[in-house]
Amino acid sequence: MIYFDNAATTRVHPAVARVVQAAMLENFGNPSSPHLLGLEAERLVRHARAALATALGCDEDEVYFTSGGTESDNLAIRGVLQTKNRKGKHIVASAIEHAAILDTLKHLEQAGLCEYTLVPPDEKGRVWPEAVGEALRNDTVLVTVMAVNNEIGTIQPVAEMVRLVKARDPEIYFHTDAVQALGKIPCRVSDWGVDLLTASGHKLSGPKGIGSLYCRKGVRLASQMTGGGQEEGLRSGTENVPGIAGFGRAVALAMEQMPERVKNWQHLQKCLLDLLLPIPDVDIHGEPLVNAPHIVNVGFPGVKGEVLVHALAGEGLFVSTGSACSSKREPHSHVLAAMQVDPLVAAGSIRISFGPDNTEDEVQMAVELIKRTVAELRRFQRY
Ligand SMILES: Cc1ncc(COP(=O)(O)O)c(C=O)c1O
Image (tube, rainbow, N blue to C red; front, side, top):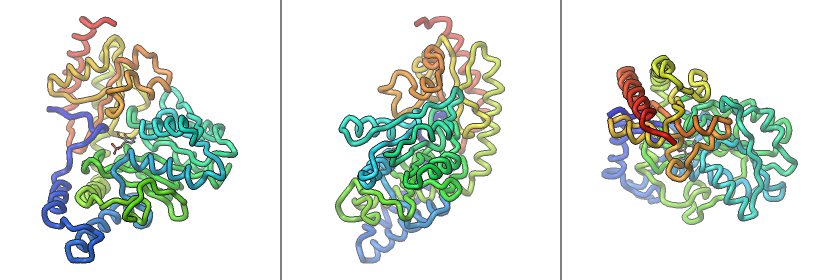
């Protein structure tokens, strides 16, 4: 098996799995309990929060645990809309955000709770700060632009955007979805100047169903989950201690190993491109060598992406068409469409994404398989 779908999810690191297991079998207390087991569970949560704070360059009490990237994105958007309702309800987002942002905006708009403007990227998938600036209105309360795109890997100039937005109106909050960025590029909130930042465990060898929201001190956010008042009242519910402990360990490992992992991914990306480019009629989307190191999106006109993905999986190579979260219900990638990629090319596109264990041998075997499969499908497939 060659697993090149790490932007969808990753295999849990063995060291992370051990921490999760210990939190389930040994330190299984409730962090709110005052006895020894409770205190031990609370210590695990504190330790994980410290790992996140170190990775993001923020204070520990600015990190809130949630059930994942989707919940953090929702909490950021819904939480800001509720506290800023006197100023307005307009939100600016890029057109290539994850469904956790785009669908949330759509739902809120349909309910009359927000208005939003989507800023299109250029043909390389870059969102220009000036274009974000042009979308701002007097009633804008939030700008949300992802740090790294999950389909093509484009790195957005978050710091520049924040500077421009804050210069126009310091009251506007800036949120970035860093789910695909953490562990791949430096994500220091003080360098970027963001008010809110989303992260998720399962994209960096951590468990699924755990994530975090960085919320800068002083930012007012309305909680979306009421109850026992955990996470300083922002996110009630007994903490997912095994998930949190595993997430913390995964983040610490990702930070420790980032220089080697990135070096390996950059090398794999280069090998992959060198081997893919000679294939007749191939389109590389975005600018892989400038983008985040773990994602390459490539189009084979004349081939259907889903058919190619299934054919490759049958041979033991796992890749995806665009985003795993929306590929079941979204026939064509909204990201490639926003980049004005020809629909025929977009329909034949696949995303290859690396994880910490991938090797050059795997890249070579994968490309051979892709070459063969694309040639066969081109011979038989017409649409
Ligand atoms: C950019 C981005 N944001 C948000 C999410 C959702 O995160 P989660 O799966 O933790 O809910 C994903 C997952 O694919 C993602 O890639």
